[in-house]
Amino acid sequence: MGDPAESSGELQWWYCLRHNRAEQGPGCPNKYRLGPYPDEASAMNALRTVAERNEAWDEQDERDS
Image 1 (spheres, one colour):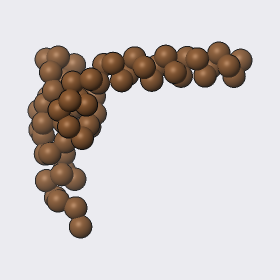
Image 2 (cartoon, rainbow, N blue to C red; image 1 turned 90 degrees about the vertical axis):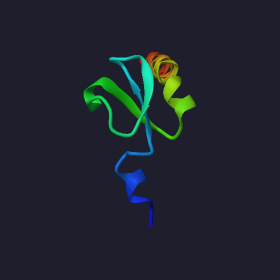
Image 3 (tube, rainbow, N blue to C red; image 1 turned 180 degrees about the horizontal axis):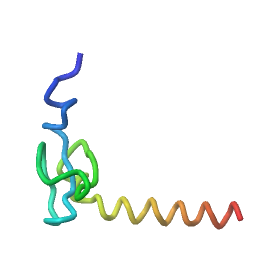
Image 4 (cartoon, rainbow, N blue to C red; image 1 turned 45 degrees about the horizontal axis):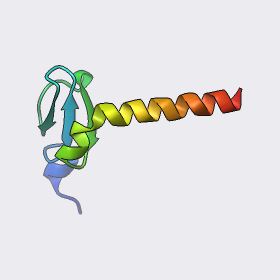
């Protein structure tokens, strides 16, 4: 079985849109956070990941039109 702390989000990383930084575990409300991410580096790259995914989805929408 998995670690209860990990499944509750205590070991996961989030990117806080309110404070523009990575947070681990309980922090700001989820409405201000992106994630969860497996590590701090991934959380710090959250905005880049979002932009890349949005661009890919826009390109897919154009191809589907």
